[in-house]
Image (cartoon, rainbow, N blue to C red; front, side, top):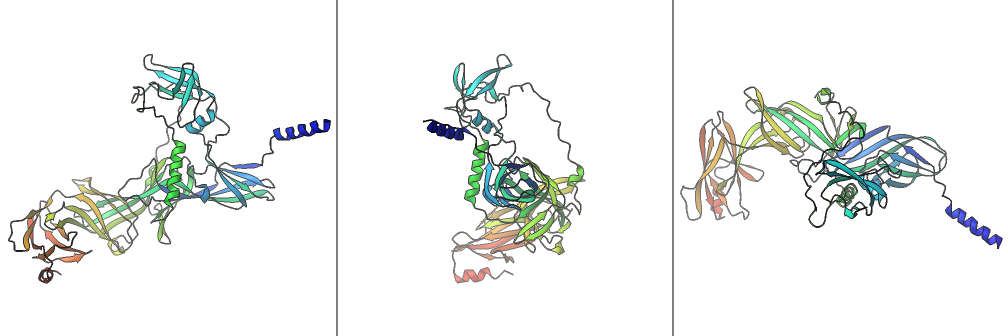
Length: 522
């Protein structure tokens, strides 16, 4: 009997005794880091980056010096990107058996989850008295739909009609202030190890932004390119070797979208009040700020002017990365949390081109005239470099001042391609259609009238597009040429002058019509 009781007591003691924890080593941050930003491949060049939810990504490579005890252990990599994809993490320098992302971050949602069933303080602002009132409450639900129990009963958070918030008396030890990745290391002799941690992370993006200044006669421009780097991550990478990758990179969209959705769910807390969003009238009311328990931090120092100076040594260097282009920033730069910054990557002082006024003709109707600055991307014309897609702002000096004359966008352009920068509509060059010409059984004569109200001559190009059925045929009175499958009439229109272009529009497709179309072409 005594032996049986002894065994029972021993089993109970072993059951209640805590298991011996495996030794853990914490790496507070990287000793060196390289960040390569990839663009959102689904975003059009003229679409701005969503700074709250950028949908590009980054490849982060961190180097850390860690000291490990002998035997199996766990390394906690603190300060990784909060948008890390744990499945992509690659650790070199030690043998890894298991990877775990520590998702218990210090956040509003984390605090609510931890304090569910515990006491907190509710701070409310009473509009009638103009004072804050505090009272104890118990959190009776999770973060998705916060319900409180007070002396007055149960209530939904922020659904009382009063501006209110929760005050927590402590920070749980289980909540980490930094995003952390833990790895279990196999049995090893111990000592110092140089460990490289490489992984993909979401919520980064970048784009090119160009600033062009046309000369007086719009025959050339100065072109400067800036890389706009955006991070919506909560982690800052200080003095990082930073790169931007241009080109289309395939990535499994299903997993990426699911990761972004999970990140949104982790960082969002729902405060919807049933049934119409709120039961009170406080929406839009700004309560005075409650008394501070500490002094606010000093404002950040102003950006150094040297940080944006365009010089030959501070422009990002372009390198080939297979079919992609890598732009390497030649100096350490900080990719700060929730930030946007710009770094120069292109500076061309004289890019030769020409300003074109373009109108499209569809059967017998004309579209709005648009201004195009056309450049052939060659070294002879002052460029000769691949241009990543992005937005373009055009300026020109008038009366001694630098004025904005148009904004547009461009897709990725290779060396040797023709680049057409769209500057917007034209006010001083117009096109109209005159239908009063002669007509036949299956044709009608159309007259396009162009007018130039500018004080200088302009080049106008009229492009003819066939209809969807391909039934319309033309017989042109002036010479045209073919470009990109379209017939083009090009004319130099003098200042304050007009020009007419006549053609017959056929509705049939006989051989005589097709041959007639070629009579006045080059």
